[in-house]
Length: 577
Ligand SMILES: Nc1ncnc2c1ncn2[C@@H]1O[C@H](COP(=O)(O)OP(=O)(O)OP(=O)(O)O)[C@@H](O)[C@H]1O
Ligand SMILES: CC(=O)C(=O)O
Ligand SMILES: [K+]
Ligand SMILES: [Mg+2]
Image (cartoon, rainbow, N blue to C red):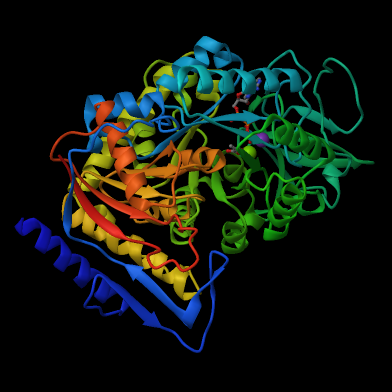
């Protein structure tokens, strides 16, 4: 039992060190008179916060297998299987997003992706029909219900960007050096030789003769020879492929001519896609070409008025302007996507790695999940193995502690989508192991987020608890949470053990699928912390998910509903007997 004393001492030291609070007893008060303040809406009596800190190593007594395990079966099938097979530390922390397209949209394909570790399915509203998207969403929900998966659904808006209209066949055309092309806004069916239709009337506004027209971030380049009304006659100066929906950008004197700001972030089509997403009950809306926080706030307000505030809004960073306003966008949104595909059209490619590192860093500091997306395993669209450079790129995103990695064309149209997913899985697991062995999380800086004392306390409890869990070599962190906030504060510290977030809220569960190291579990929650703990441990024992001797750190932020609550948050270390 020396262990018990050690952990109690350690807990006190850590909490004293990090909060500046000192204490003698297990439950102590911090007088903050004359302030009165709210804690999750409850006015506290006497203007004091009481925090319970119990760090004695307790044993879960040989709990009788509870009569009422109903409602406690919310482990997803994949986590359950992996936990049994590999143990707590074998669970992958980095989350995986797959873009669903024609190559992986059958029920069987989707099931294989879910079994392969897909945490979020992304539907790009740029492509395919409403009926097709609805069918995919239904299949995912059916698999979740019938096969016990926990795969969230994300829709990704088309957004307003200037590109070539997709005429269907032929799928790509080659532009030869010196060839002359017309870029027009005139609508026409089929294809015309040396003519491409732009999707936006004003695509050539402000463009002058001599400007450079860059296709898809450098796939091909043209020089503007002549303006004819809105149309542009151009000469190919750097030959290459013109793909359907190829992106058009103009450069002058080595700098991008910024044009996107006159277009709304959400077009009429985007708004109708959003209504569709709301009615289909999607979990995330990824907003393309966000330029400022206003755009994010606008959508979030709209969702609130529709009683759909539980849908999380992810801002895609894929324009120069969004980089100038990164912090305000991160603060306004529920998460971020580093959309390297379009970003690479707006900034020089050699800047992508450092920009990615900055964005992932800012997101972690501000406690927002971040997805690294596009071309992670691009060659696997055609080939069954990745290039070494691609594996290095995936590893780098994991080393940066990104919350999630995303497949695009690799899963949507590629021939080896499941293989690509398994490359992400094995590469991220390997890199996470290295990261743990090298104590990489020690170098992570933390920024204080909370302003009020209760928020700061919650934050400090999570920071301290993670330090405890790492130092004591604990097997898992259990957090009981309604809205997932404390689970995310744990995740932000990138702890060694996995974080099991027990929640009674389905939306919370589906939102946590994107957060690094968090295994969301749907359960009934009682006001009694001890009941919650013994019920979950019971359940995990019956399912063979915990073993005798496993030591877990337990934190609850479920506020008891009694009138004068005395213990709001507590840290406990328990061993399974
Ligand atoms: N639902 C779909 N139906 C048909 N093709 C799809 C679908 N989703 C994706 N694709 C194909 O997969 C490719 C990669 O998909 P992805 O959505 O990542 O690319 P994208 O269109 O460049 O993304 P974005 O427009 O958001 O920047 C697309 O170019 C498209 O050809
Ligand atoms: C994913 C996406 O939108 C991009 O990379 O541009
Ligand atoms: K999109
Ligand atoms: Mg994009």
